[in-house]
Length: 225
Image (cartoon, rainbow, N blue to C red; front, side, top):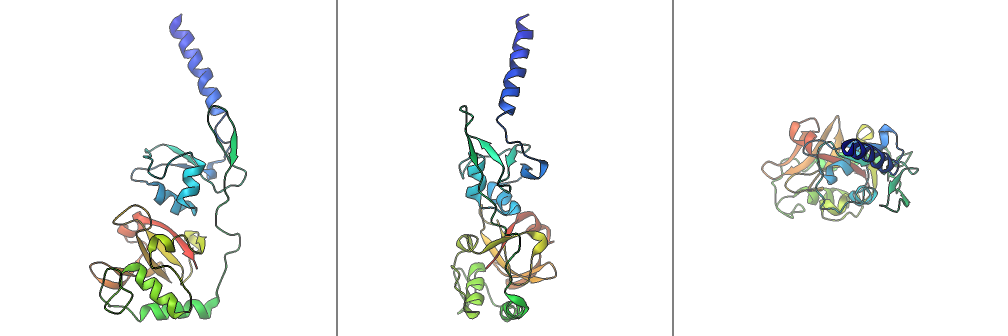
């Protein structure tokens, strides 16, 4: 008899817990996969890692497990449980605009042409072109030549501009990856045709494909400055 009572209580508690979970459709819930990090998931969803962590009451250093369900802050009508009190907090909207800003074909073509001028230059840590480039230094130099100021840090560059969905990439957009560390530790400039130009640590300034397994797995997201 005690066993059946415990089972019944478990079911009741489970139902009560589920009542606190956001009534989100499938598009507003992300199921964690093997190898995922908060940074990578935030990049795929087009939101900041802070928004994602806040929406799920996680710290930025929290460990997430495969199969865990995370609420995506991509819907302004989504809510998350605030704990046993069942108070709810509205989730911040995604920084992806309905209509993405465009600087025009002339500008984007100039960005690509300028970046391609540096093909073959050697890699240099923190370099901005005098003796070589690092990844963020290449972006910094190219955009400076276009009279636009961006930080010389891939992490800071990731905070700039507007998030761009993968399917809406246009030449001149910045593409980010998590490589030697968590978060946007590598950046390149999209040149079209599913390719981007970047400063590789072992090969210098090269053009690579987003479809290459190394970059496809580590892709975080894109920004339009």
